[in-house]
Image (cartoon, rainbow, N blue to C red; front, top):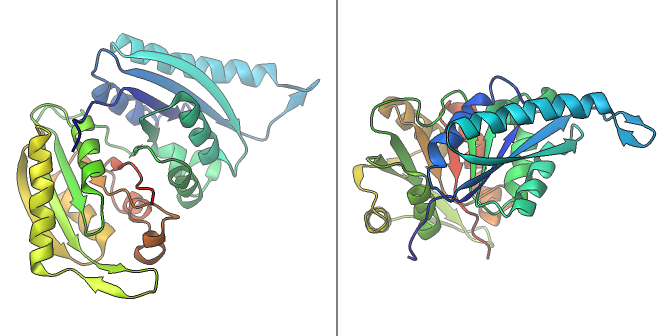
Length: 289
């Protein structure tokens, strides 16, 4: 595995709501590199009003104040930041964020809970699906609990399964893990379907090998493993319960995303986790065939 680096180009998407402040605090916690740069994308989701062919001046002014306040908050915390204002109708918020991230060449996208669950009454499914399907880079979705809120050693639940690209998942873990992080590797046994519809169920030896390889890669990246758990059952509810019981600060899941072949059979784990946990959920870089 090539050396992992901290996230350097972070796209922070916000709608200016109080709930999105958790995403701001999380961005501050992970943008620790002196070379890290954050672009704050203020996505203004409304029925666009036009005046003489231009976006309403009053609306632009309000959006500008909100994004400037976020940029100022990042500056005060020592994070280099810049602003961008995006427009999107009610059905294309995720697409607008994805376009902004691609234009910025972001290696991480951070978005607050309101932006995915209550953004102008949008459903969490439509926006999260649009965003995860539209991006290959890691996506961090923050709900009520920002990373870095606790003074204790941060805890990361690292959920893996057969078929995951462990190298990409570990790179995401190393890139986001602060110093003195505790990591619990959680393996969820599941059936892996082929394109022909045949299922392969992991053996005990395969499960042990997957867990051992994940632990070796984490150790090589300088992230020690402080716990290992193997489970069977529905992936999202099981991971969410482990994260709650262990009082984790972050859940990292594999790179399978909605729209991938495997997800057609296995279900969108990241999406389901958002309904079952208040922990931030980081989906690793997508694996392209």
